[in-house]
Image (cartoon, rainbow, N blue to C red; front, side, top):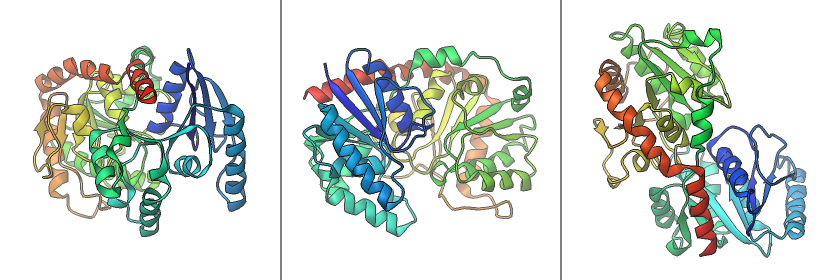
Length: 390
């Protein structure tokens, strides 16, 4: 039996949060599991015992949180402490403990894409100093492992692959829940759907601009964007100014996006960067044809597991084994007044092609659930326990 503590800022909706929710629930059936959060926000179920140790916002709160964390770890005496996301990593790395300390990296290195120089410098400093003292570093993709060793000169022997999990049984159950009457109007012929936080890295404004072009040929098409985030106002304004209110729905956050996914036709994922891209795997469970940017670092590993990463960015779609890999948008904000970019035009053309060609959709829909099996929570739990035992 293992005594294992997960440390995470909060347990709200997100890939890292889902990972803790699923793993703690499954592992607690046999092992002693603790979930430690820095905020009281809890929207997801969890297994084992939960502890909230502070807000970790103001300096006084941070100091208090570190003291509370130290005392709690000393009391619980876990064998392993696994942190997820930056604030939790910092706390885990800086707090003395007899437990083994693992950092589970969920995001692609910030400074490679992030436009805030201060945050970039902080990210580099943390990795070059106290993060590297962790006993093991878990990563959600092979490319992420390579980048970490390359950028920060980490010992590759300390880095282990651990994919984010999904609960296939649960998704297959809740995806059949009925829609509200008003939700039936969200769907068209065909329906495209995107699920993810409304943030810069998800690139949804590129998708909206491309979808305007799709409607020139597929007038009955609809686009659903599920999620919450700081870009909601910008995206809502863009939809309105492009006169897309009748065809694009900003749905907002939900614990069950699978009802919407299962009734859609194409999952579209124009991310600029990812750590893994758990929504892609959830779309595979729901039997969707997936169109994803070939961004670092998860999509290619999920959709084309037998093909290595290429240093050259995609210029045209790649019809991979389990989905369609697309060129990565440039991440530059553009409004309704600016001309469509070459990349957005390629997305529009191939969204139209896939929307028209039911044979393409049937082929990918038939094999999608097969790939999803590789990420089921029971399999990922075994991967984690194997890493702990090494």
